[in-house]
Image (cartoon, rainbow, N blue to C red; front, top):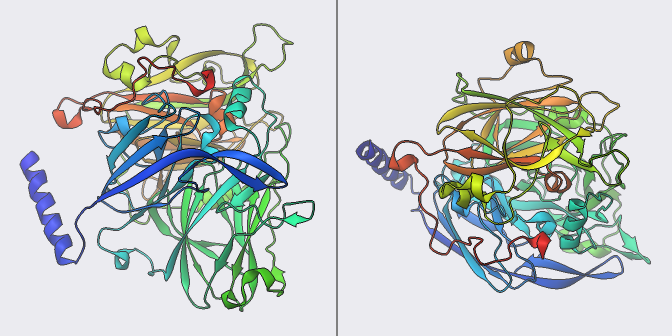
Length: 570
Ligand code: C2O
């Protein structure tokens, strides 16, 4: 077995060398995390950032490279970094979610992440994975093909541009996390941002915020590497007078799909080509938050604009050509999202496993954590009627590796395979550290079901699984029907992703092979949702061979021994 893998590898390496491709490299970065004052909307706000940048530095690698990132924590909070979408095969220790795979790196401490980026091409990203800190600690992770840009499965772009959608919060993010843990959900960002800029719809005392400006040359093709790094709502992204051709999502190629609106949810990435084929001028690039209708809580209107400019020589600030604005969908309209996602298919046919070992139905809902009715602040999120809580004294991965999960985790519970009652809406619930164990190489199908009646709180929930990509087999509105809906699954060319958006009032079905031993967080990527319990940990057991067994932790692993671990407890 090992010998034949070696031969295949050798042949592959020889073929790549013949094609003129480079050898795998070691890419090294140092992330110094510290606080810095930023001035927006009349206020100085202290924000925690990497290397003094917001968004943080983009990491660029070639598929197959090894990445080494030294994190030096000069901030006052414990934190971890997660490599969102990186599969981390046999390397769960480097995945990064706080208290799931490691304890936070304490202030004035360092930790080095080491991992390989293998079998993935496109755009991923990295972010802090303790509460809300990721709102300012994030950046793109760009993975180029080993055999060069001529091997993109789409016309070679003239330029590649990361577009990071974020949000500007003028509050202390650690404090914000505490508020959500105390079930106060009223805080909102002041504005979305595009590559860190709030844009000209935001102003304070007449001082207008800067727009992100993308200078283009007529006739050229741009590959936008779009990352949704904001902590909550889905965004519609439009550029007046231009179309996008989507070529990849979550670092998986898709059949080119042309649209005037990209819909992107928290955690997701989209690679899209834009041809500068409009009459020379200036065009707004608009990111608009989509919001759930009532009875879900209503957010302020969140819109940010950048500018696509054909006149770079003029200097965009003093250019007075009128800027063309796109027409935006209604912010309560979830249909563009539903159709955008329904139109994505994998570039190539996919090896979808047909025999399912584990069928899991997960009901997403809100619950009431109080013992009696009438208490204030009782609402939590829950999956199959359990609201997830992080362990407090050990990381789940460490507990799992040393085989003492049940003794070291305070309230441990196995996620039931089905919801206890198939009824929705604010019923009493409890908290626990929820895990679901699966055998190595089991084929797992999960159907996520949102509340489907319009008098209940329902959201589009972006469910993100660490350590695996999955196939998105189908989505639908209303209540999932195992017989009817499974017949309509796409088993031929479903898109592979690491985030699945469960449509509002509907369901979403995913399937994957649990081939990566370890403890993998599975959670809604909306921060208020994960912090209030919409999560579980998937425990993938070891296989029977050394190559299917999780190796021991790295020597400098941040275990929780002798440290006051949780940020929220500080
Ligand atoms: Cu970007 Cu656990 O997530």
